[in-house]
Length: 66
Image (cartoon, rainbow, N blue to C red; front, side, top):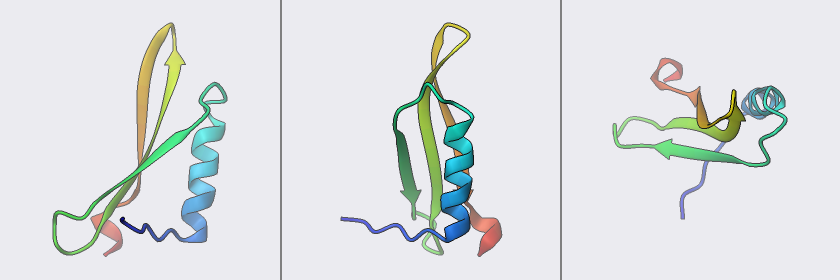
């Protein structure tokens, strides 16, 4: 099991992100720690956009915060 630690600001960013897409009912958080230094955390949702089913991804934590 992998634990993901999020700052309060990250939770607010996630809320603002999913509020843009009210037709999406769930989100997926992914964490990539393959760099060996820190983790890149992304949030993705699936939604219908202009008749297409799309995945929209937002990076929450990247190497710029290390």
